[in-house]
Image 1 (cartoon, one colour):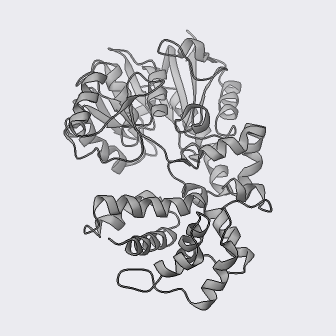
Image 2 (cartoon, rainbow, N blue to C red):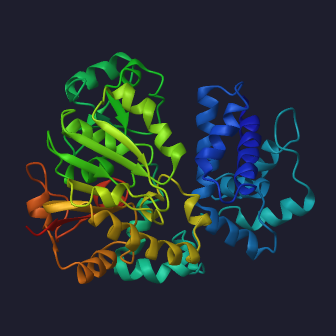
Length: 431
């Protein structure tokens, strides 16, 4: 593809994202490229990076266009992003030449609207703080209360491209085996800093078509997610429940930690998500997992009350910890989403706690940065469940030092730990 054709494809991809406001951008992009198989790997990366760059700066780009009284649209957003990256207006006009496969030419009104952006960076001192920090207005005071003066630095880290982390499946081989196998595919990796199960690839690389992935030797999983799974403390022979298992990412890590011995119940309210775990379990060589669909009026949990050594609750949440990886999520998040999620999280935590045996552990986790979904939920739960107490991170940490954070809970952020944002609390039921 020519550079102009790549710009046109990025504009088209952004239009598809805008027309599906409640659908994650990566899902929209997958469908977009599936319908355009003629776009090669290098072009696909270029188009994606251009589109994702706009999504990362969307609030600031909207602000710039609003200053000149022009409604934002994908054509102008891409053009504005180029100008704030040092392009001249003449260069943008040449790229929007209307030639074959390129964007249609900018008209006089569009050129006039874009001219004030020439020579400027994306930031401007007159921007309101939520705009400058790329977040919804309503969430700004919540994150400011969480991070204080560190908030700008925490949000700046969200602007970086997330690395690609892999978890080595120790059922199939060692981390050194996985590194060697990936190197044969031309993929260089480095060990993750905190998880002894992890390998990191800078940037984006296609790994799912390679032998290391297809054989089940590695699985895509953020280092923070690996740490959450390890905090469960699952051991061979235990009975473990993954109460919000989804497609089974943490279930796979639990099975590995248990050396395929014992039993894992992977539970979820979504049949498609549970069905999606089947192929992953088979590829990983996991055979100690049973799947259970949680439905209204279901007696399964009641019959198994007090029957599990470990229960993991990877609760549905706002996903604010994944903004580095999913910048479009900030555009879709509404205050009403948090209002709906908080009672749901409390209900799920209460339900899952009944499965824990005396002396067993309950791990509550989110990929959220908000205290309202994290510490506040745990404290409210402990207030109504005195039979549970916090296991401090110093006791729950599964590996030799270093531990990533102080305090009783796991609290990871992209800035401090170069992982997605994760929270986890380990709670133990009294004997």
